[in-house]
Image 1 (cartoon, rainbow, N blue to C red):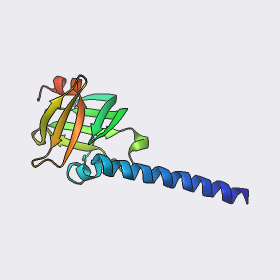
Image 2: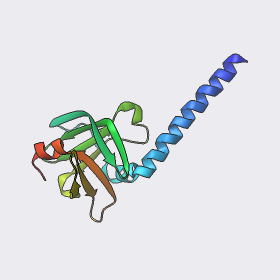
Image 3: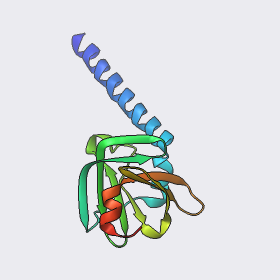
Image 4: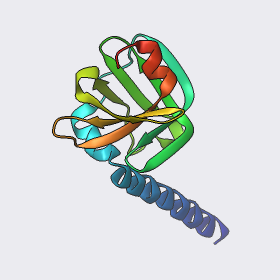
Length: 130
């Protein structure tokens, strides 16, 4: 009896976790971006770990991993957030600068825009693409 109750509890927690990640992916627009900008693999270039990134109205504080080179920028979240949030790759030509804040630069993605992302200012400055 105790094993059944424990297993049921674990399944409920995992189900709740998956449901939460799924809802975050939809609310942030990550799932929409992933349909067109799924990353094919790792990106050569400078890498920044545990940086703050945003997608739509959601901010992932210190949960992002960004790689950038002259072709574009790869955006991924930490592994425990990856279900429903696959890594993304955006060619620079598809990023249209919207505004810059103290630590982040916001971009509309695509033309017409299908989403919005925020990248650390250092990433944008160091790649000298925008």
